[in-house]
Structures are given as C-alpha cells and as structure tokens.
Length: 290
Ligand code: GLY
Image 1: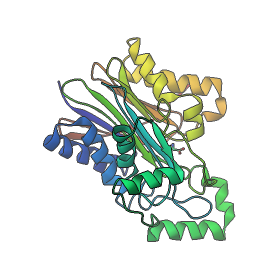
Image 2: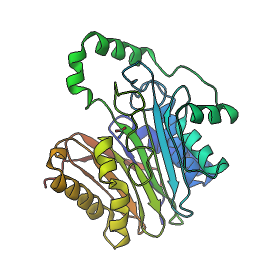
Image 3: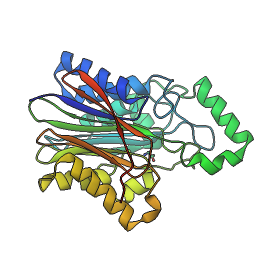
Image 4: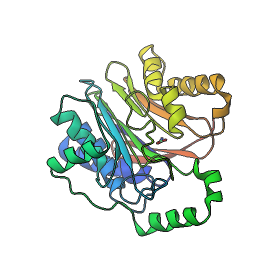
C-alpha cells in the first residue's frame, strides 16, 4: 500500500507535499510528516496564505489559525486567532499532545506557546506589510478582499492505512480582528477517521464551516463512497442549499480508507498537489457544475 499526501493550491502545495514526504522517509510518522509540510510553508514568507508573511487583519496584525486530527485515535489539536507565533500547526500539535483540550485561542494560546518554548516574533514580512499599506490607502480594494485568502491543508495516508488531516491559515485578508474561519475547526477545515477517510478544506471559511465540508465528505466515505464522489457530494449539497456559494471557490479534498483520493471545488482556480510514494503530480480541479 502506498503513502499518499494531497495538499492545496498552485504555489504552496508542491513544497508542502515534498516536505511531508521527506519527513515521512526519515520519521515514518504520518503526523510529523503532515506537520512538516505545513511548517515548510508557514516559515517561508513567499507564501502569503499562512504563517510568517500571511496577510494581516484590518489592524495590520497577522492572526493565525491551525488544526490537525489523527484518524487512528481521533485526537485533535487546534489554535485560533494567535498572534506572534509560528509555526502554529506545531502549536496545535502541542495543544493535542500536552493538554486535555482540543483548542486554545488568542492571547492564551500565545501564552501556552511561550510556556512551551515558542518565541514571540513579528509575522509581517516586507511583502505583507506593503500589501496591507496599499489596502489601507485604497479601501476600494476591500471590494475584493473577501477573495484574498487561502489556506494550506494537507491530508495524508501512510502504508499502514493510517490517516491524518492538518490545516493552517492566516484566514481572510483584512479580516475583522478576532474573526475565525473553518481552518481550526475539526469537521470544517479538517477531519480524519481511519475507519472512513480523511478530508480537508480551503476557501470561504464561513461557508466551509456552515456546511462542515470535511466531516460531511468523510461521512460519505464511511458509507462507501470513493473520495472523489464524497467530495463532489459535499460541494453539491453546499451549492444546492446555498446557491450564493457557487463560483466562490471553496474546496474539499480527501483520501478514503481504501486509499483513493479526490477533490471538488465550487469555483475556479484550485490546484491539488499529490505525492504518492515520492512521485509528485499537479492536478487542476475545475469548478463542479451543480
Ligand atoms: N479557509 C480559511 C478561512 O476562511 O479562514
């Protein structure tokens, strides 16, 4: 049985799955591999979606969300609205492993981070600061601000059939301070259960959360749907129930317990990256016609 990673978006997905695979070869830990994939992208300011260099909120502060789930134990860790800490996916893992809780939020998550050896630092890069200042100068850019976001999510399955889903984001650009989207919410931005499958999401956090896209896709897999059909059913249900979501590019993708993968999107522009036993491929995902 192969080891498979699937991750999100044209630019970030490839380094994410490559870092995950490299880590997996060394550690044979699917959880560490998925974490390493996201850490790779979080620490690189070239990617404005997550971590250092992520686009800030309306007050110029980068506020990060992250979460992960282990499909064998159903253990979950998450953090939301965290300022000044990277990598937040590692902080989410620390919440899972060092506390009895699922999520820590805001300043208290940062305090927990400091207690666990993370350093507080500025998360604005030259590029994200320049973009923020441009937005401040011309608020008409707010017309499109709701589109200026994405997230990096990775779903993995190892040779033993174990599943992990993990997700990290700086959320919606220029968001209201304190706004939290789907990404740190188990069932919305990520979900994994070895008895069914694993799924992750990216796109409009409010819609993904409203429809619990990752959980819904995994539950479809539990009934025997292949991952592709499960993801399509999740997007179809969202668009049918709330037609304004069509064209907005929310995405759910996943891997079934049988090892097949799939992805579906409600709008254009999404690319998945897949790594199967080290062989990496790029897969554009057209908008589903509902
Ligand atoms: N999907 C990321 C967010 O909306 O925050």
